[in-house]
Length: 327
Image 1 (cartoon, helix red, strand yellow):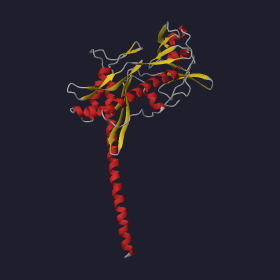
Image 2 (image 1 turned 135 degrees about the vertical axis):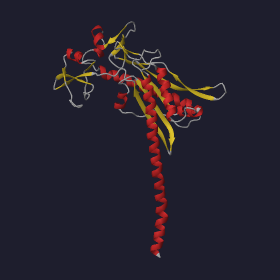
Image 3 (image 1 turned 90 degrees about the vertical axis):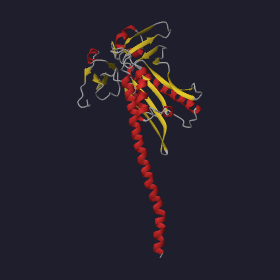
């Protein structure tokens, strides 16, 4: 009898626990399935948007690297393509209310341009029917600007093309670093300077500030619409930030979509493959100057960057080949 009571007691304790675990496992699977599905939906939208950056409004004039210094992109086509895929993948293309709700979860949308970035902020307005509505507006271009200790202002691009304004603000010079360094006293442009490190840092800082401002404004607007979720800029690794500045592209942050007892939070980056081309890094190894392609492992300390192996060799660097990604 005592054994039977113990068995009943065990069943009373174990069965609810086992049922809860089974239910929780099913819920976990469903959430994982939705996360994977949403990841694919957001990534596809950003990839389509980034690809559309290379489509020009004038037929036959595709976006391109003009004279290796100017990139023409179609931002309107990119944003339209992003939203078309974004809404379609989430099944709200024909649902105006659904589109507005989904858009409210897009905390930041940003285009990484050749010489500056553009953010698309969420703005609320009153429609003709008197109801509160929302839309995305393109903000002003934010150039990738850096001020050196002497007061000179340097505007960077995704490659080595720069614009330098002197400390007095009375004159400026622009061109590729290798072309203008003999014409200016700007220390950062000289051989051996940490040009690439400073350039990448300036671009990443500009993008980070713009995203923070966009998400801050998004919180203000969505609270007016009754949202309780607080959007924040996710912590990204240095490698993830570096990937955002390899080419003209699009960056989107989607946050706060309920999935079970959690919320979906992710970001996606798409490159237009316009600017991206091999870069050659100059560095020292065993006290000798070498250069290697960007397709090889990145040197720990880069002295200079070059747009061709010929330019690197002319600067006194020896080629360092790599096989299967190893030097």
